[in-house]
Length: 139
Image 1 (cartoon, one colour):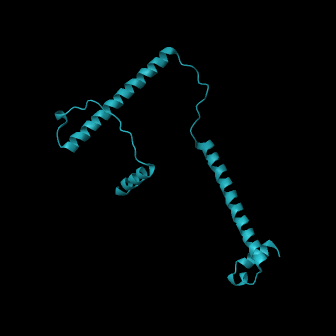
Image 2: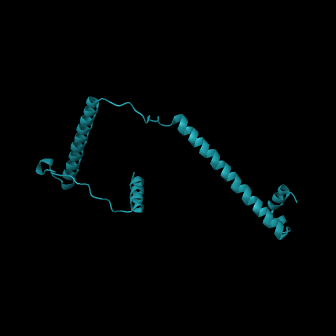
Image 3: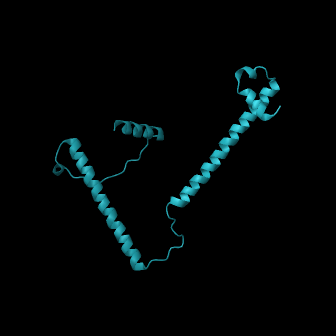
């Protein structure tokens, strides 16, 4: 019996009962291989499409051999980064001070934040995902 004929017979539940065990096993094997083959080909096509999209619309790659900047340019760049980081730290301190003042229902002039220290997060990834899900559902 041809594969196509066997698969056509498997499409009708009444004719499945009339097939021998060997024919049913072969039809099941053909169906499995056909399904896995189609899935595998679809995944390969998706892989090529995503790589094509990455090449067409992805970020520009930075060259690995960038020209060396002068010493003066590098030092000015470092100074700009340090001043940017200091500015960010001041903004973070101001935001924390404001949040504390709101939580304590007092004015910001009543206390001074002297130091800010990051506390290590000991929660599991599942608890962080649950918290993010709950926050997202609130809004």
